[in-house]
Image: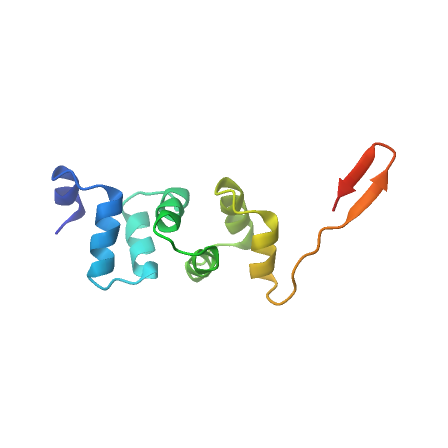
Length: 110
Protein backbone atom coordinates (compact mmCIF):
# COMPACT_ATOMS: atom_id res chain seq x y z
CA UNK A 1 0.00 0.00 0.00
CA UNK A 2 1.19 3.49 -0.78
CA UNK A 3 1.85 5.91 2.08
CA UNK A 4 -0.72 8.44 0.79
CA UNK A 5 -3.49 5.86 0.77
CA UNK A 6 -2.52 4.73 4.27
CA UNK A 7 -2.78 8.31 5.53
CA UNK A 8 -6.14 8.77 3.78
CA UNK A 9 -7.33 5.63 5.57
CA UNK A 10 -6.44 7.34 8.88
CA UNK A 11 -3.40 5.19 9.65
CA UNK A 12 -1.04 6.77 12.15
CA UNK A 13 2.73 6.87 11.77
CA UNK A 14 2.94 4.28 14.54
CA UNK A 15 0.60 1.92 12.69
CA UNK A 16 2.50 2.41 9.44
CA UNK A 17 5.81 1.76 11.22
CA UNK A 18 4.45 -1.49 12.69
CA UNK A 19 3.09 -2.54 9.30
CA UNK A 20 6.51 -2.04 7.69
CA UNK A 21 8.17 -4.01 10.50
CA UNK A 22 5.72 -6.89 10.00
CA UNK A 23 6.56 -6.81 6.28
CA UNK A 24 10.16 -7.55 7.25
CA UNK A 25 11.65 -4.13 6.57
CA UNK A 26 14.75 -3.47 8.62
CA UNK A 27 15.18 -0.24 10.64
CA UNK A 28 17.61 1.23 8.09
CA UNK A 29 15.08 0.79 5.28
CA UNK A 30 12.28 2.24 7.39
CA UNK A 31 14.41 5.23 8.40
CA UNK A 32 15.25 5.99 4.76
CA UNK A 33 11.60 5.63 3.79
CA UNK A 34 10.41 8.11 6.45
CA UNK A 35 13.04 10.63 5.37
CA UNK A 36 12.01 10.26 1.70
CA UNK A 37 8.41 10.89 2.81
CA UNK A 38 9.43 14.22 4.32
CA UNK A 39 9.82 13.35 7.99
CA UNK A 40 12.72 14.98 9.81
CA UNK A 41 15.52 13.03 11.45
CA UNK A 42 14.08 14.07 14.81
CA UNK A 43 10.52 12.91 14.01
CA UNK A 44 11.80 9.61 12.68
CA UNK A 45 14.12 9.07 15.63
CA UNK A 46 11.34 9.79 18.14
CA UNK A 47 9.13 7.26 16.35
CA UNK A 48 11.86 4.63 16.53
CA UNK A 49 12.51 5.28 20.23
CA UNK A 50 8.77 5.03 20.96
CA UNK A 51 8.90 1.55 19.46
CA UNK A 52 11.70 0.45 21.81
CA UNK A 53 14.65 0.93 19.48
CA UNK A 54 17.65 1.34 21.76
CA UNK A 55 19.78 4.51 21.52
CA UNK A 56 22.82 2.50 20.41
CA UNK A 57 20.76 1.02 17.56
CA UNK A 58 19.56 4.51 16.59
CA UNK A 59 23.15 5.74 16.64
CA UNK A 60 24.12 2.92 14.25
CA UNK A 61 21.28 3.78 11.87
CA UNK A 62 22.25 7.46 11.83
CA UNK A 63 25.89 6.57 11.28
CA UNK A 64 25.03 4.25 8.38
CA UNK A 65 22.90 7.04 6.88
CA UNK A 66 26.10 9.08 6.63
CA UNK A 67 25.20 11.59 9.34
CA UNK A 68 28.11 13.57 10.75
CA UNK A 69 29.01 13.30 14.42
CA UNK A 70 27.97 16.94 14.83
CA UNK A 71 24.48 16.35 13.40
CA UNK A 72 24.06 13.18 15.49
CA UNK A 73 25.08 15.12 18.62
CA UNK A 74 22.60 17.92 17.89
CA UNK A 75 19.86 15.34 17.36
CA UNK A 76 20.87 13.58 20.60
CA UNK A 77 20.39 16.85 22.48
CA UNK A 78 16.93 17.35 20.98
CA UNK A 79 15.98 13.80 21.97
CA UNK A 80 17.31 14.34 25.53
CA UNK A 81 19.46 11.22 25.33
CA UNK A 82 22.39 12.75 27.20
CA UNK A 83 26.04 13.55 26.59
CA UNK A 84 27.40 10.53 28.44
CA UNK A 85 25.37 8.10 26.36
CA UNK A 86 26.55 9.47 23.01
CA UNK A 87 30.13 9.68 24.25
CA UNK A 88 30.04 6.01 25.24
CA UNK A 89 28.72 5.11 21.78
CA UNK A 90 31.25 7.31 20.02
CA UNK A 91 34.20 5.98 22.03
CA UNK A 92 33.20 2.36 22.76
CA UNK A 93 34.78 0.70 25.77
CA UNK A 94 35.77 4.00 27.35
CA UNK A 95 33.03 5.26 29.67
CA UNK A 96 33.17 8.96 30.40
CA UNK A 97 33.56 9.84 34.02
CA UNK A 98 32.19 13.10 35.24
CA UNK A 99 34.58 14.87 37.53
CA UNK A 100 33.98 17.82 39.77
CA UNK A 101 36.19 20.82 40.28
CA UNK A 102 35.95 23.25 43.14
CA UNK A 103 35.78 26.87 42.08
CA UNK A 104 35.23 30.12 43.92
CA UNK A 105 31.56 29.98 42.91
CA UNK A 106 31.00 26.36 43.92
CA UNK A 107 31.39 22.98 42.30
CA UNK A 108 31.62 22.58 38.53
CA UNK A 109 31.05 19.33 36.62
CA UNK A 110 33.37 18.62 33.71
